Image 1 (cartoon, rainbow, N blue to C red):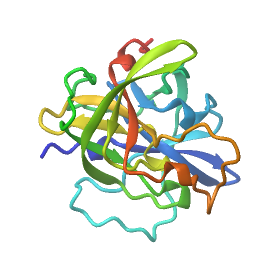
Image 2: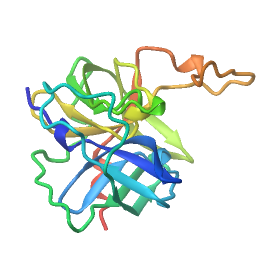
Image 3: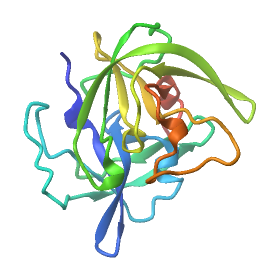
Length: 217
């Protein structure tokens, strides 16, 4: 199995000497990180990125560690229509990217994909997690009159996985960026323990990675 988890970072916002975890991000080349726009809300004030504490998915991850070392990152491009954002990699970092940017055109219902991210980040749990999943559907989603390519994956995506990469399990190609779980627009919805019950289903949405290349400055 091709494993790219060592390059999936956490994004956090430092506040009063502590860091509030926001979501996942990952490099697309030696200069830029990608994430979901809603993770940053278009604001890079006190925004920091941090590498995972493991170098192999088989390593035990120490959940008692309550701190992490992060480097300041700045937004260089935003696409709120497709919920994508690019960040500048700090100058003192070096990254060798073992994958290429593709898209969702080559995927089909039943295609196997690897989803990386930090699913319980909103509770301060910084555990890099790999989910092996399958594509359930390919859809066009419209936002402000612009239709974009997405895939539905057959795994529930939690907030901490937003902005994380999704790879073709067989080729290792970056095919999509995790956005989140579908929630219908309904009135009178409630939140239980910080969770919208309408999102509790075994699917998640991801936008095609092909749009990232057009955002590179």
